[in-house]
Every structure is written in C-alpha cells, then in structure tokens.
Length: 329
Image (cartoon, rainbow, N blue to C red; front, side):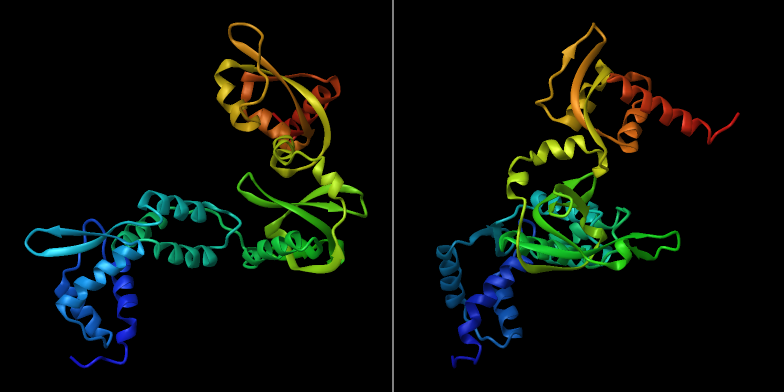
C-alpha cells in the first residue's frame, strides 16, 4: 500500500482518536480506527493498527481491550479521573472572580481532559448552576500580571474602581494609578485578593483582583519584604472578615456548643476552645473590628455573645442600635 502524505502523523491521530472518543463505556474497533484514519487522509491496515496500539502502550497510554460482540479498545485511565475533572469544572463555575465568558472558555478546555462522551455529562452539570459572576473580563489576566510582578520582584501599578448604582465603573483616586509591591494572592469569601505592601502608607494592604484595571509590572523593585515575612497570611485572612479592614484587637467570644463547627470553619482547627460549662465554650481570637465582623456575629443569633473587650461590646451595641433605627416600630 502506497504511503499517504499524512502517514507520519498516523500514530498521533490514533492517540488523539482514542483520547477523545473512548472510555469505559465507549470503545473503538480496529475497523473503526481504520475508518477514522481514512477520513483524515491516512491509509492504514489491520496489522499496522495492532503495532501502533502496542507502541502507544509502551509510550504510556493505558489502552485496554474489550471482547463482546466485537473487539474494541479504550483508554482505561487518564491523568485526571472523571471525579477530578468534575471538581475542576465546579470550581471554575463557582468562582465569582471569573466572568461567565471566561468560565465557558475554561470549561471547554477542561472537558478535553476526558472523552467527548464524558464531557457531555460535565456540560449538563455546568448549566444547572446559576451563580453571580464577575463583570470584569480582564480579571483572568490580572492574576497573570500580578504573578509576573511577584516572580520578577517588581512593583505593579493599577487603577482601582467600584461600581455605581448605574452599574458603571468609578475609579478611585480620580483615576490615578495605585503602585504597590505584590506578594501573594489569597482566596477569601468567594473573591480573589492581592496582598501587597504600600510603600507610601508603610503597611500591608489588600485589594480585590476583580476591581483592578490597567494593571502592569513596573521597573521598580518590590519593597516591604520584611513586613510580608512577618505576616501570617492564613491568620490575616481569618481575622479580616470578608477582607474589610478595621482596628485589630483580641476579642473574647462565648458560643453555644452547637456552633463548634462554625468556629472551626472560620478560624481553623488550631483555634483554642475553652469549655465554660456543659453548653458553652469560649475563644479569644484576634480580629479586625468592622461591620462585616458584626454582621457575622449577628448572623449566629443568640448562640454567640461578645464578652470583651468593653469597647467592642459598646461598638456592637451601637451598631445594633443604628440598624434598629432603620426599622421604627
């Protein structure tokens, strides 16, 4: 048989075919493979297909044979198993900082990690969700620019904005650039944050990545390395509720035992829990006092109480009174 112009690509096309079109419930026979290769302009014979399959096995592909009404072959295991791919898909879909357009593009790429048949199951899984997504299309590339700044030990500059009631961007500092030294990216409360050192304020600050625009690395080297090394990033995200900063202090909180899981979820397994009586426990934890912290306390209802310090108790009481004024009897 005369060799076709694409003959040198035969093994690659065969591997692609098996990866895309086979799994445990979908196999291809040798006749199917010959037909598929012919559609790609590649001539093949039964004997050479057997040799090619063996070569792909030696290369590392887990190709198994099934004998029923007809003999078929399929990829038995992959770099990512289907439950792992489902986890990746759901993580992308649930990420608020990734826009709907970029979510769809990423999921299409993730689907290629499995067969086209299993990809259909992933596709159905995706669209049963209806989550709020970011409106900033550039956020995906912001992460890359921040990473470049960190890797290159350079400061970055960006514009920072919020949305108005008309759903329009309004830039802070009259549209002037922020310039900071980037050190870490943190996922907190369904949002992505940059942890950076502000040389002007001489302190560590954080910024929502999806609120950053026109971001780029500068030629200036980063500053504040000592301040960042002294920072426990994990502890920082625990004490700054929803990344709203405030005055930091150690707060003593009394909880009903039923909220032990809630406390561990928020502060981690290392939090020190002190038994008060048969129904209550107490913790002392450093937090930054903010309306978001008070909102978290309020959401737990009567099963939590702020014991101290006194100024935090007073602030919480004033916060509750201010809210009550919005709902006169």
